Length: 196
Ligand SMILES: [Fe+2]
Image (tube, rainbow, N blue to C red; front, side, top):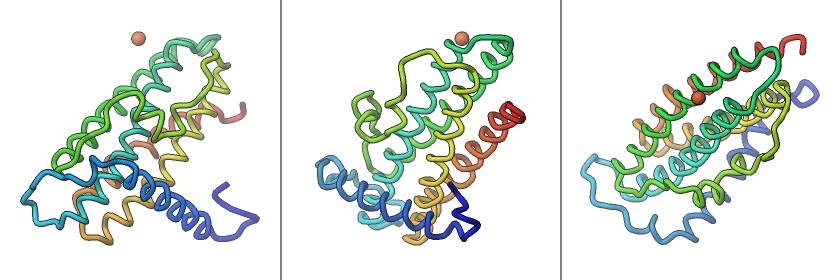
């Protein structure tokens, strides 16, 4: 998906950014909460904080969704790789749990309200709508890779936009913690599929 017939990935990145902007704009219009940010004296205009809160709540929903997907896989995995994957999935769950906390606390720090409940996740993140069925280990791994790549594409677009509007802290959180963690987890998951 990232390389289309050997051409540049830039059009795909632009597509992600455009789609994200439209979806976030729509959510902002739907949700009154975003209109009333708490007063916070960190030298960022309310408009800047407004957009960062929307972006971070988006990432929060994705993080809650993939965190729980890891626990689903931790419980439901089976076969000859059961013990290894059971442990790995729980380790990745714990990392996602830390990301959830870091993202949610930055939403609050910016004067926003962190969206914490299951209905918010279902509404904001398509990653929460996966099969309830038990899957093979290969299907579990492929599903996790898809989820990581989806989040990475959005996180890069949101990080670039945060930097452009001068919110270096949000950019740093997205790059140093979110993107780096997802890239690392992608590597660990992907290596299990080598030759599968
Ligand atoms: Fe467990």
